[in-house]
Image (cartoon, rainbow over all chains, first blue to last red; front, top):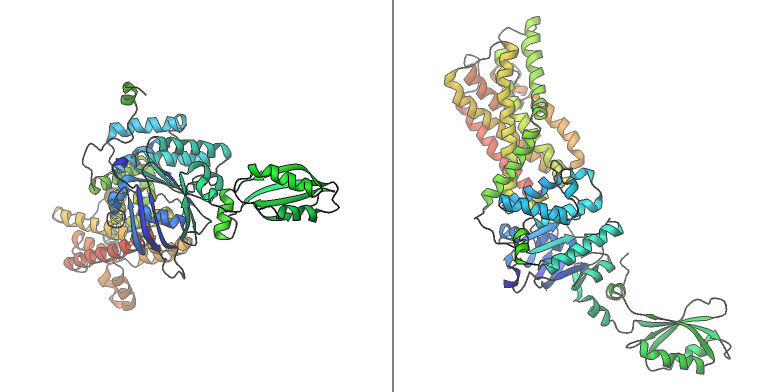
Length: 327
Length: 275
């Protein structure tokens, strides 16, 4: 189904301004998600992630712009769009009056999955998600991680082409988080397109084929996590610990390093009992520079005793783009 | 994976094998509500019957036997209590669940994400609430026979009584839709207290409306409560010798109120459901 559409999710010039709000929550966003891709939305709370997902899942009407899921316009044909999308929300919205198994079965019946197929699928998903032995329990009796699993299982009952997960690992313990990451990887391998929102850098890096960084309703960057990091110029560092040899103070060493062509700037960090700790910001790859830096330090009369290579992370990209940290 | 395995594992991306429209989805949702109502049927009955049962017992039987109410009062009261059971059960079956589902449990989201128009989700809520309310009103008849020995009844009025009861049930459900979608969750307790009691006592269920002509202001207040037309309509059909508002006026007013309340409730529902 998905492979026939060139695009799984298509958003163009999307704007949402809530009534009485002074600014747009989503301020003109455009992007495309390929079929079978895991697409991550990274941004702080209030950045517009949940609103964008809300529009794509037909729960929020956009002020302007277009949004299509599996080729279906979510504004013109919300009923059609709801057939092909699945949603795992941030908060527990399971049916408390039904057992886990009944939650899955009734959800499938809303979506017209024939009786025999929905029973088989429920059995399959319950065992896949480790819920089979407690499938007659009510949702209220389960932990947060288990609730999350139930909601993913429920969303998969009607075999959506695109699955939306809003902050899927918020409030989960590490084991539950890993379990969920595995499931998402498996879904991807089965060809389901997955769109997740997160404010967790590690989650965005690990799970996503591409990450959209969003803040104040605007799309700041969109690329594979590795490519986003690679494009960060001047943020590679060498943290050097230098012991005073012939030199009497660190400034001579600092000056020598500054004169190297590949070095942008040098900062003195703390001063741990006699040794100088210098952070050297460099251009290009760090490893080939090691020898040059060591030589320069030696020439200036210091002695290099320890060095750490610092590669930029998605967090650095985020700080660079937004001017502030996520958390 | 072998071909045999493929047959065993339900294919997640199989084509849908039968045509499926919003109607079927609405029916599937209704089936879920009937399933849950059915499973808790005794509790549901106790919940909805207790209030009219006590009203009928105290006002229709105790006060009459003690001589504080005239002997014929139970006959005047009974149709009113059928109306009360229909309207109040309808109201309670939509208002409180909606408030909870929209704010605390978010349970309604799975329906709002099902392939049917959002408005149909609201209409389904009204339909299931009206079904519950009709049952509650219907149960009043055997209870009336049991408590009072006999209840006013005429075979000729049966069809009209059934239709008016259904209208009352829908009216209550629509009122609940309005309340459940317009009232902020943190105010629902105070709103219920402020709405239910006046509704209960201004709906002409405990007295015939025309007899209020000496308390003009109260008569006007009662005329504004749409439940009055259900009470009066049922009273007119079941005990025609008691002064009552003309039946056709009752039908027109009750149906009109239903339509207006449903329209307002739908507006409120769409406002809550769509951002």
